Image 1 (cartoon, one colour):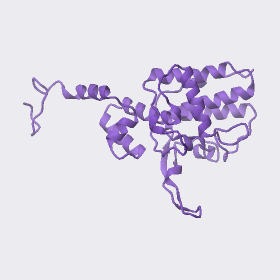
Image 2 (cartoon, rainbow, N blue to C red):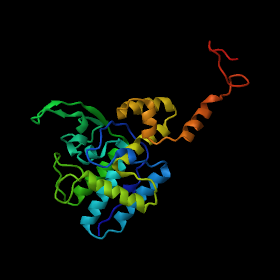
Image 3 (cartoon, rainbow, N blue to C red):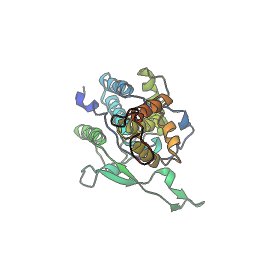
Image 4 (cartoon, rainbow, N blue to C red):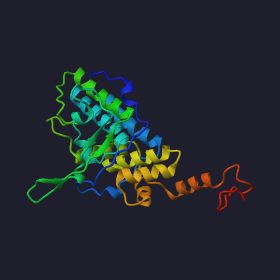
Amino acid sequence: MLAVQKDYYDNIDNIVNFPGYNEPWNYKSTRMECLYNDKEVSKLNDVFVRHIQITNSYKRKKKAIRNLTMYQCSINIGLRGGDFCKLRWFTIYDKDWNIKDGEDFVPQKTTKKNNKGEIIKRKYVRLVYNDNFKGAIERWRQFLLENGEDIDIRNYVFQTSKNNSIKQKTWYDIVEEYRIEAGIQQKIGTHGLRKTFGRRYYMAADNKWDALIQLERIFRHGSPEITLVYICVTDQEIYDNIKKICVEEGHGDFGFVNYDGGDK
């Protein structure tokens, strides 16, 4: 039986920024919600881990570890599902297999073709790899090498048994199956993992306004209001944040500041 160390599963904390594009298939991304808190993130992570622990063949364990890696990476990079499923090793590693800090990347949405199928315009965005993303990817690579897998740097990172990239629909179905198993009520899908990245980015920030403006740029939204809805921020959470900044010590009896900057 294949031995997998427990620390393989535990890196699910911080996140980094990344822009993306519209879903290339028929599931409507706006219907997907996100994982609202660390408890839900951990509950879903535990289900991915459990599927590794209950498998008794190499083929199934390999698939289960791939799925866990995809989950941990997706909430740390914020890519849309179609692009995420088609990541290749050379996007993350250099030719000597040193992991990069980031990479210029062309999402499918930013590539435009003419009626002959020729590329007439493409727009690069910057992928940024944080420590959690790097750790999950490197553990996945080491697992493959330790089990005699041949890795070509041109290959897809997340492959099927036939060495094709995993399809977005397949990844969507896995996430939804495990989400139900975890007892999480709201639909997540692949797009909900991207929204989870954005929400965690926002909630972890000390300055929520700066984080919102950054996320608006990351997601290519038209306004901060759109981004707030996108990352599933509730009216109550907005109200609670307003209360935190409205009354501060050191601004007189009522905490107000007049037009010229002096205390009333």
